[in-house]
Length: 407
View 1 (cartoon, rainbow, N blue to C red):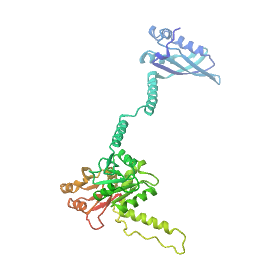
View 2 (view 1 turned 120 degrees about the vertical axis):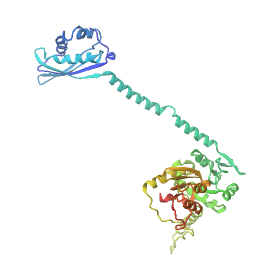
View 3 (view 1 turned 180 degrees about the vertical axis):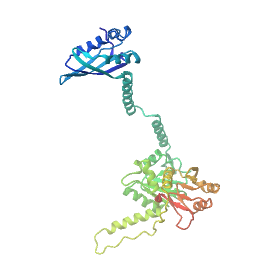
View 4 (view 1 turned 120 degrees about the horizontal axis):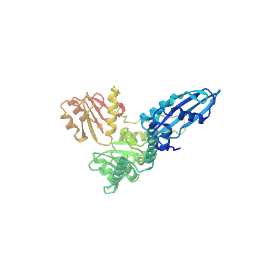
């Protein structure tokens, strides 16, 4: 008798059977062929369909429980939906198998192609995961890698001391001073092009000259060596600000997020100098002595501003924009709906504020808020000025001034 290949089957009829007695599997198959014979006409005769391969091998699985036989019947079919449904319905006319009463019910018709399609989809997912984990990076990853390589290639030798530096030292109003070439490379990798290295702990003449012309931030490692560099720099040059890498980390190894956080928490050069002096005094008085004296307080206390109440949604927007502005030396102006009106370099900010015609609501900048910026914002009827820090004392301006600490 011919058999249909399982691969050619499009549908499978699933049926269940209950028999009031004990019968064998051949009895069930014989009843299916015998009791449907002549019922559906010559075109749908089960024996002929199986010979021609349109019906596959009929699978019967039975078990005897308490003197009754129960089981399942599976019939693969390569016919169309309507013909397969007719065969499934014809099975239910079977009422006796051998000497026993029987009840046969077709439960479902399974579309084998859907099962195969599901398998294909799941297998394709597995293969794709393997491909993504082990194959070449996607175009965005390639673009990022190339961009980082190009930035690193932009390192130059600056000044008569031929110091490693980014390409934007001359054109930037503010610069970062770091310890070595590796620090400059890491900052370049993250898009910061205004850094120059000292190439050691001694301060080159080129650095001293830059400190006299630029707004300088010393970006040092988060260890004792960083303190030594700050001490050396502040003793021979005019350092405006100091920021440090996280404790125990070096500038050459920190991430972009850590770079931004360090720049946001920078302090004035004078405050950093006083902090180092205070630490040295505290270390000196820790030796046992009859009368313990308190360490001297810094002569220049940091400017303390009262905390300002700001709506949470404003804080979140201001914080995100300020983070994106770090290292750009630019400013961003918002309207009352906190939509961006424009972005300008700090050098053009005051002129931009004068031309707003009361359309602005808040201005955020990568730098310190000074009296001139605060006055220009007041004249433009702005509500907020948000900067990394503020040189304006409380009461000196009618406008609300916010810093990183307020956010």
